[in-house]
Length: 324
Image: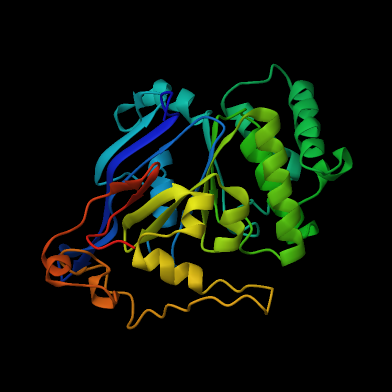
């Protein structure tokens, strides 16, 4: 990138311990995130895609330190997020927010919408009095397409799409620079998905927001993201611009994912790439390249040597010994 990135993640790892026995000692570990690195510029959207269980959401939560990473470095505007404590980290939290996947579970059912959206303003003391908080809440609700009258209602009185708008308003309350979008439309109907995606794009243009857009729907990511990172079993296997990735994938896993995306035009023929076998156990991932047990091009080198991300075209990197 020509300018310093807003967010830079290097070698991020998260291993969850498995305890057993009478003394509940650690007997093994789940390798949820295993050496993830990427950069995100201000005002940019980076899509993070992969099948369920590959570590996408865990990566997003580690960036925000909702989960403490096992290893690696997260830099936000050049500052080490992992080294921050107390008031310094509290101030940073205003700049990084999250929109959760489930709009039904992410809102407190005992709080009104006004209290939910305004809670961050109270915690961070960003409003002088209750009237100022209410005015800001009304502004936020109207920004996301809701009305001021709805601030007195409770979450159960809203539809799924409206609840997700409330979650977006809550994330916007502290005027962040980065929002982690953790599959924000996967629980919504298709027609509502389009509305929420268009809202997120409008807000990005208005407030110069950076998004880490986590999803498993490749068609959604193609529409929303300027660049796309593909994850498999805790590792990023390919990063490229959206146009480059969808037109000329280099990694066999990316190629297989794209071949499974339905095409609405029946006259268009696409080569179907079928992946054999199941996803390996993340407790004991395969040696070398994690994808080699299912890869149609795997060779002996793939079994013994883990590939690193290397540039195969301008702005296009992939972790594969034998790319397309």
